[in-house]
Image (cartoon, rainbow over all chains, first blue to last red):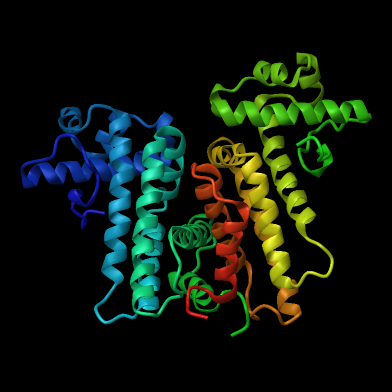
Length: 206
Length: 206
């Protein structure tokens, strides 16, 4: 995760002002992902996070007031990392369908490498419902904006909106859950091909 | 929920032998759905369940040994009720696409009437991971079996399998989450039309 700067997400009330501070914050968020992912929110502890991060307890309180606060920052950070990872896969000159599948590729690669994202986001439903909602609302908005580009260029069917964005998001999340999280990993390319087939033709014969 | 017999799901180690026993078990499961849905697993209590059910504490222990056990039975019961509700919507003579959208209609109607299903199934990921997995694995199997029927009749694209079933399940679950759970209810028919459009044409122009 260290390639993604903390300001892609991971908002904290106290922004680091130095490069060293940004590195410490990044370490804390990466450590929090492992700690919450392995132990769950209730069993996770601030000392467990700082131990994994190799930072002093004081560093934690420089950036966060509580376990709740770093959890909230972590959900936002993971949203930001998924967004950045998806954007990385999108190349100039791609058509609308290629952009859609590239963004999905980025999400699935992230999920394979950071399987803890599912447990963390899912636990947010109970620990911090606002973060949970915000994660999905902002992801759906990005999908909708890609759909709108494709509709504007005539590559996608007109009249689609937020509901189609939520439908596609569910398809992507469940493909990742089944094949990146629930064992029996499949290559990302295979999962993307499944989604692409549905995006191109639905489930009817071509 | 009282129209669905307990043996559609809600397995317990001690099956009721009388009609009265079946009614008591049904009352306990319905009460558990409300108790777990409102309070979450950790705050929910056996006495809260029996109070809502209007049964004696002893009746609870006739069927369940613990809060964990009724929670597990409840997840399985809800799977069974979704299955029954979907089956109700499917009528003889429907083509494969009509069967698919009818089954989705049944699921969404159930979700609108029993919004607690999302919280309960989602919490199972943490409280009882086997139930969580079993809920989705068995739902995906039903979707796959419908896809297989449509492939056999030539109405659906050949070569689809478990992955497509998971993709469709995700689409259905997220449409329900957005429009049955997260406020701003939309009519079930509108959600079904969104899914149907994607099943028929993907996101490309017709």
